[in-house]
Length: 291
Length: 345
Ligand SMILES: Nc1ncnc2c1ncn2[C@@H]1O[C@H](COP(=O)(O)OP(=O)(O)OP(=O)(O)O)[C@@H](O)[C@H]1O
Ligand SMILES: [Mg+2]
Image 1: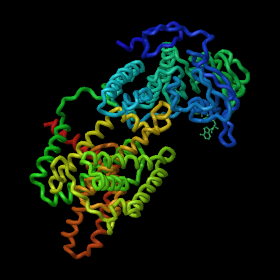
Image 2: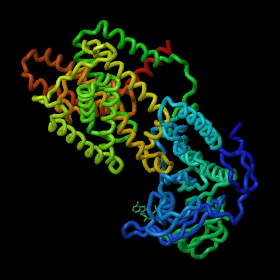
Image 3: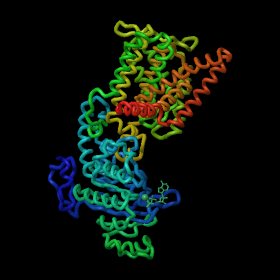
Image 4: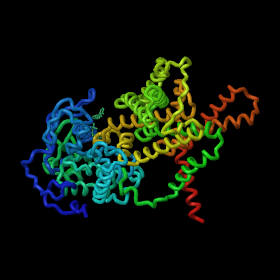
């Protein structure tokens, strides 16, 4: 069974793709080049300065949380990284290339996949087709035409991958259904599946747990951790639930009014007086409680 | 995408396939043998051409989500291209069809370029440019109509491999064969890998872009294919139904008619084009028969026509309010009902 690679326990974060399971795994070392480096990113909408000189990096295999109050600029940051917004200043280094603006169409090729704060699925397609859409970028030219052997081959290979991912996220039973008929929690998972199938090195998750029930949140958190552990990819995780963030992330960036006000390991950020003041107000209980 | 997970192995002859085969047998064998000349000339020939136009527009609007009000202009491009190819190059029929549709596709791509920037309502308005510009072009330059004094040209009889498509039945069979082949192609297309591209672009362009769906190429391909099909519909309209070509026959009214067909039939369904065209062609005929019977000549032709338009318009509006998903979804419900009744006995 091909999906086994996903359920093998892994001792440390490592890069393993669905496609190249036989390749030897190289353990990630701290000295490896960052999966993403942002330097001096600024972005303004008219008078609103959504991002002010934001710089940080994401290491391979790391879950990097971005937190901050509503309107802090978290989604804007993800939109800049994925090229939907054009930063006024700053550079984005991805896969060894430096960009002022990342062309969105190149994201899958650069190994970047994302989900959206508000669901961005294709309601007119089935769950299987929604997941498969994450692989369209790999399709050979003209393989969209019917009647071609290449199209058929590609379709079969895609179907196998869709099944693997669906099995991993427990979506198998829903594959033939129209995605819009699924409950919200499952739709969030389909969006994650669509991002995962592209075999990214960097996953951008904009509030993947927003609107989920407690059980669903726990399941989603487990999925995110499993994806990182078993595929060794890096994750940028935007999330409001401090408990989830503290438990899941390796390092946390705190944004407030578009500015990075803290950056470090969860225990460092939790104690940071600036964060407590700006982000939580005088009541620091939730942070302490999340330890 | 023909994902194995999505389409479990089905028996070769499902009820739906049997129904389609029976319908095709009736259309290919029954109609030429038994249908009255009036049925073929007044109903089936315009029905086939308009169904094909509706199918072409549905590919663009229903599947790829790009609104167009220029369908009639692309029909005109197909018709005039076919006329000039026959007149000046004398190419065999299949090549005439091929080049006429290629011409329409090229023009479609040009007028599809604004779709790279414009959406929805704004795009619809920009496709009006195609409608007005092309109609003006065919009126203005006599070359297109071989300098015919009236601007109305009679379409030459099509022929291929010793067959001339002159008789009513042969024109009908030519149109039917063309429509059948193109419908099969479109069916395979929209249920094949291209389905994801088209619907992704329609449903969420931003998401489509970041997962690497070639949004611009998909839109232009949709414009090209849709215009090619509508161009062929124009050839059928002029060469098998009217047997004349004039710019007035391809005016904005016709574009709206095709849009109605696509919407009333049901967007993003193939049979919707046929159901919609059936309604648009047959309903006015029924109305005129009905009004002739009710008023018995008591109304002048002008008011009869006006009444018909009002009734047709009111029907469309009522219908869209009651069933926004079109005739196709009504048919779905009817067949589900019939099935459950049959299952019970
Ligand atoms: N497309 C846009 N046009 C204008 N202003 C925008 C746009 N996107 C974001 N903004 C503004 O930029 C600021 C940051 O918004 P952003 O959505 O990035 O915040 P956020 O941290 O994701 O908030 P939330 O937790 O509510 O999702 C806000 O003031 C917002 O109004
Ligand atoms: Mg946000």
